[in-house]
Image (cartoon, rainbow, N blue to C red; front, top):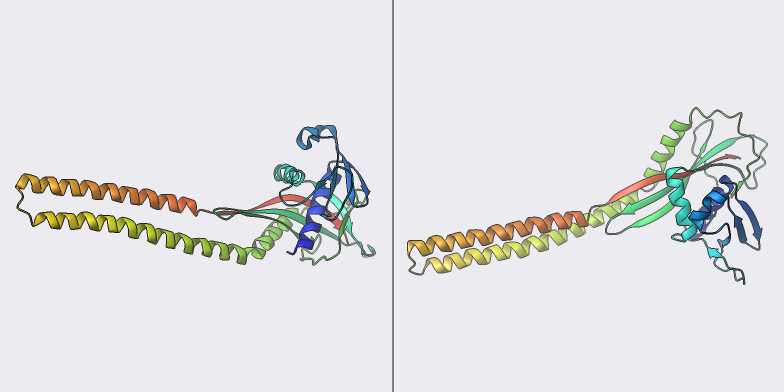
Amino acid sequence: MNETESNILIKDITLGFFNAINANIICTNDVYEISIPEKYCHIFKNKIFSITFDSKIKSKMDFELITPGSDTLSHIINLCKTKGPITKGFIKNSTLKNNSFGIRFYFYIKFDGIYSFTELDYVDLDLNTAELLDIKDELLFNSKIEIEHLDFESMPSLYMKATKSIRKKFETDEKKIINSLLKEKENESAKINSEYNQMIDEVEKNIKTNENKFLSDKDTHNLYDEAMEKIHKIRHEQTTMSDTISAKYKSTLSYTLIGIVIFQY
């Protein structure tokens, strides 16, 4: 997904959320004044605030640029993780004569590990045929679109298909990251094991060196006991370090549904 597509998606999710919670939205020169219901004020800190999606906007107004990691978008994603909103809209430039309806599933993709990343993406499906849709035009929100006549019994199967589709889309990236991490882990483990094995070799060499000396039986036993204790400690440290490395390179990739749009196209 390129930067332009990402910005459009962020805009869709942000405005879609505010539409879903019945916020009042006024757009002036690409700056959006948002007035939210009272029950959300403790989350967004203010009842009325301004945002924009265009980094080139220069204004005397106090507004927040909505980008990945911005406070407002983070609040929206966290809210949607627990209860993603269902909104309504239509595709810009579509004639709407066919009376066709689609469903858009928004996903928040998060990779946790030594290298972490987050991504926003979506899957469009035809509501009736369940076919994947390749929608290029902008999705515009409109709460007045009638959807009461639509059959939503297939919603669970549509969600499953959307989940499979989004997983397949990121499958290649996931494999590349995991293979890269596995190689780094193997290299670090090999280095650590080599260092500890060298330490054990030095202990064993020390035994052989002292074996050639004329030692009493008691001294010989003490020599072996001390050596075995040192090797045991080294092996224990090696195991602990190995567990630490494994934990260091442990990773998870999650796909969280954060919103649904029923749209006419």
